[in-house]
Image (spheres, rainbow, N blue to C red):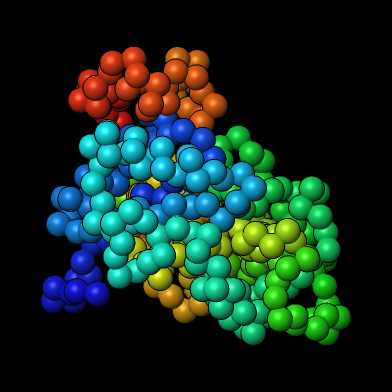
Length: 286
Ligand code: GLU
């Protein structure tokens, strides 16, 4: 990576999940990400987060690239333009994810958990606003000598063992100082699902690090995920990026926009004759 003095060149990313069409809320968060990369004279990376192949569709991935380009996005590296940190399609990075999982296993940061996720929550998708956090009870951790490390993670859930009582502090570029405590604000979380799919919390940290991302710009509903991801960075001895969590765009009823929100998908707006300039002029500035 190029460095100027001791400053790292800014590298930002757009990390959409192709489970549906992009809506105006995505566009706004991504626009902030693009602006921050441009203002810093840095690079912008597009990474398609399609690890959950049962939920993600290649047609959504190509549609989102088209929608982003129409809206005025331009990235320096991505699945369609290549780049030195590829693959930029998350499902193609499995060997790398396995390597990092093995590392966590060797360092005893992860353990197999027979307790079904049904009891608590569902990974790998990013947990979003309104989803209650249920703390995984630490007494559900298996005794260290009660299992033999396997060659692959498949067939059982793997949890990250959080260091109970450890404080995670960071200063968010928009939300300011944040403090979380492991074991109180969140418990052991799944990093690899028993159906063989690695979890969001884990792969996003691994890929952001591997792609040299220096600042993560995303929705403020992911602040708690950031605390979890910082623990992954710490466990692996990696330096975390800077964080910038954006406000969520809401509909007239105050509900955050979702992929299922009708009428606000970029392609619907485009078909209705709206231009990106009009759409940007209409969204709130905070
Ligand atoms: N693919 C994740 C999502 O769409 C990315 C979240 C993030 O930016 O870390 O929710």
